[in-house]
Image (cartoon, rainbow, N blue to C red; front, side, top):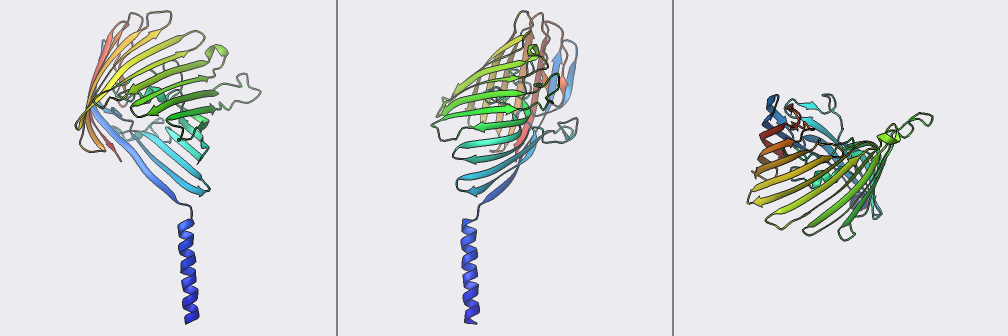
Length: 342
C-alpha cells in the first residue's frame, strides 16, 4: 500500500511539473457586426436601404498562438468579411477567409507571416482615416488605380516590437505565373512599410509595386500618414499616390477625431487629383458615435462629394451600392447604424 502511494505521489508530481512547463496555447473567436440604415443620392438616382460596415468592417474570425518554448511562438489568423444586411459572405455571396488567412512564426527576431494579408501599402490609408475607410464618410485614398487592399500568396517580415516605438514590414507576394508565360511577373507585389509610434505621435510611410501584364500596366503606390493625439482632439493626415505609365492619381486627406465622454466626433476633408485632366473631386465627411459600452456603438455619418467637369465619383457603401451621378455632378449620403464587437 505504501509503495502504491509513493508511486501515485511520484506520478502526480511528475504530471504537475509537466503541466507547468508545457507550452501554452490559445484560440480566440472574434468579430464585428455592423449594420445601418442608409441613403445615398446622386444627380441621376438615389438608393435607400440597409448598409453594412458603416463604422467597422463586419467580419468573423479565429486567431490563436502557441508557445513553442525557447522564445518562439506559432500563430494563425483566419478572418472573413460579411454583409450583415443579407448574411452573405464577401466572395460572390459565399463565405471565405478573404480578409486574412495566415500562419506566423514569432520570436525575438520579429515575425514571419505567410498567406493572404493586408497589403503593406493599404494599411496607412486605413489606420489614419478617422472613418477607417468605411461607410459614407470613408476616404478614397486607396485602390484608386489598382493597388491591392488584401493580397494573396504573401510572405511578410515584421520587425520586433521592442525598438523604442519604431516598426517596419517587408512584404513579397507571388503572382504564381509559369516561367514560360508571356507575363511571368503578372500579379507579383513588393511592399515596404515603416513607422514610429510613441506616446501621442504616430507617423508611417509605405511604398509598393504591383506588376501588370506589361511594364506600362505596373501600379506603384506610395503614401505617408500620421496623427498627433492631444487628448481632446486627434488631427490626422494622409497623402497617397498611385500611378501607372499612363495615369497618376494623388490624394490628400485632413481628418480629426475628438472624444467627448462616451461620444466621439469624426471629420475629414479629402482632395483627389488625376494628373493631366480635370477628373478631380473633393469629399467632406462628418460623423458621430456614442459608445453604449466598450464593445457597442451607435453611430451616424454624412459624406458629400463635389466633382470637377471630368469626374463623376459617387458615394458607394457596402451592402447598398452607389448612387449614380453625372460628370461634374455631386453625390451625398448618410447612414445611422450600430456596431458591436465580440
